[in-house]
Image (cartoon, helix red, strand yellow):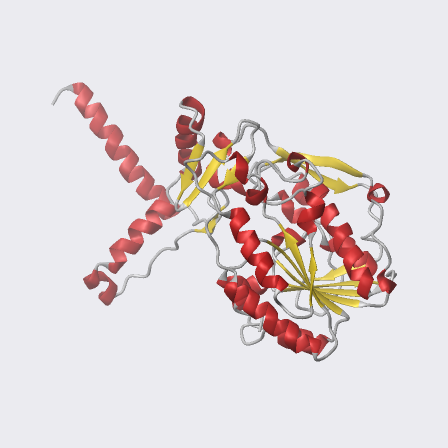
Length: 397
C-alpha cells in the first residue's frame, strides 16, 4: 500500500469513527428546524430488540439523524443542486417544490377529498344551531393554490380543483355562514399577499382576511363594530430576514430572496389584551412575540411573532368593542388574524384540533363539547383550503 492510500484510509476511518464518537458524546438534538420534523432518539437495547435486529435498524436511523454537522451536509448538497446546476425543483420526501423565476417557492398540490371535513362541519353546525350559536367558515386559499398556474406542466397540481370541491361541500351545509376571503384576495396582486419562502400569507393578505371576517360577523353580531382601518396600525417591515417553511424544507440554497415580517408599529392591542397560554389559569401572557423577529438563526420561524400553536389559547380584552365571546377553530393561517379580532370581543378562545391528541386536557374531548360548555356568541373556522386532513377533523365532534 502506497503512502497516498494510507492517507485516504486514515481519512476515511477518521471520519467514520470520529462521527461515531461525536454522536456518542454530543447532546442529542430533538428537532430539525430545517427538515421541520422530530429527530430519532437513542434506542434502548433489549434482548428482544437485539435478537430481532430492530435495535440495529433503530440505531442506524438514530445515528443518521444525530450525525454531526447534518444541517451543513444538507446545505452543501443543496448548494450543488440548486446553485451550481440551477435545479428548480426540490424533492423532499413525497413533496415537490418549484422555484419560480421571481423567487417564489411553490409546493405541488395533491388532489384532496374534503368529504370528512364537510361532514364534521355539518355535524358541528347542526348541534350548535340547536343552541342558537352561529357557525362561520372562512375560505382562505393556500399559497400554492394562488401560484398554481406558475408550476410547469410536468408538475400536475390540483389546488383549484380541491378548493372547488371544498366550497361545493360547504355550501351544502345548512345554516353555515361562508366567508369568501378568496374573492377579496383575488383583487390584489398575489405577490403582495404571500411570502416567497413560506407557505403562509403575509400580513397584507391576513389583514384583508381580518377585514372580510369582521364584516361578515358584523351582519350577525353588529355589536362588534366595523373592521379597524389598516392605517391605524402603521404596519412596517421589521426584523431580520425571514426564511420560511419552504426554505427550511429545501435549505437556504433554494432561496433567491428572503422575506421580511410586516408588523404593526402602533400596537393598540397589547395594552388591553392578554393571552392565557400557560395552564395556570393566569392571563398574563403576551399577544405578540417580538423576540422572534431578531433571533439570529436564519431558520427561525418568525411567523411565531403572531402567536403559538397549541390546543387552546384564550385571549381576554379589558376594553373590548363589544362584550361578545368568539371561538375560533384554526390552523396556522389564523395566527396573524387573531390579534386584530381580539379588539372586537371580550374573550376569544382559539382551538387548534391538530394538537388535541397531544394535550391531556383534550384527548377525550372535542370542539363541540368545548363550545357547548363555553357558550360563545359565535364560532368561526379560520383555516386554509388544504386543511382537510384527519388531524384537523378527528376532534371536531
